[in-house]
Image (cartoon, rainbow over all chains, first blue to last red; front, side, top):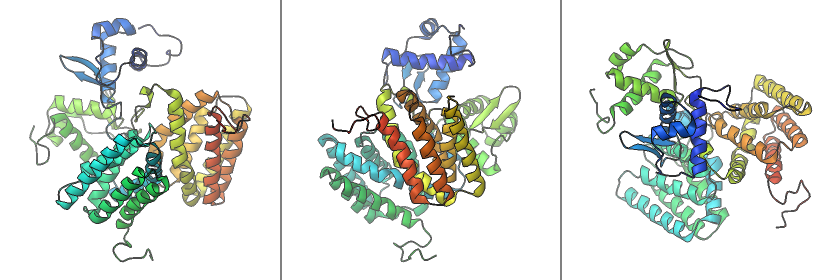
Length: 238
Length: 238
């Protein structure tokens, strides 16, 4: 393949990946859009067939593209967000993972809720209201509420107005999953009350209260995995 | 392939990936360790050769494994952290990306510096000292300091004691890269002073000062990309 300035030291596949990404941008291709067929792409990108295929596979593995066999190549709806993007499934110490993920969530989610109180549209608030109620219903019915719970937090991330936040969702999801395993699904009452308080504060455009409520929600969770939990009668005396 | 309880609804490749990850954990395999050959893996995991190969390729694409042709399969040194894990290269509005990445960094890096002041070992502080000086030298020599700058922030993340922080490095790296492009490499004096202040506060075990210095460092950066920058004589009056 012909290489251009700045491409000299890279493998043909890496160069092809860059050209493909540039092509998507230049053509303004987004969610679900179809790419030209392989032969045309080879011509457009000035690369050979096997290099192109390898590049397509690599971008599919990164969830940027979706290769449907016998149908064509499409822009993935997953927006290039990798499965387990931080390699959390590889961490062996699950207790520490749960603790550190909560620490991380405490660093970002209260602020995220405060931003949502500034930026959420009326339509988004109605969606949050629906999701909050749906989590409550599942908890009251004693059914698994994890997925819906994720969706509630995810939606708040989208309301924050920051484009990084909703991309961090896979990490946050991981956090909730690991945590719920650790605590065996406790904190049902506290979850309902604090979720509702976050929602009410966002609706009232009260950033401080939204941050406080989210903080309280997460602190309940963190307390619960401490050996000397206040909620369980301890006092962090150790 | 034989499927077990909980595996029923998933593709053979997905099941194989899970079994491989479990195998790595059970065997305690880490950085650079070699996996058994394909034939043995097929027996161990009870899967066919082509399914195994596809699973290995997928885990290689996720930087969990490294497949060296003709040599063998190894655990990757990249710890499963994906290239561009949040798909940031796909975001077209680079100005907004720079702004939102800085907003995100302001949410986590001051706290990260405060934690580093609590947890850094004497050896780690010596490393930070070296990196801080190396960035200064490059800036004074008018040479590119981006890579070394990343390394300084990265090392502080490792000192925080939270296992998520150093895994967030690829995102932070992206942030610094995009930002430096946006501002055309300004802020050299401010970078030297605020980096040094972060280092000194960590050395003095002063969490509050470490957080303040990092905050100031990032606020300088954010100010600089505002149209009405205070550093450039404006006053956010617009």
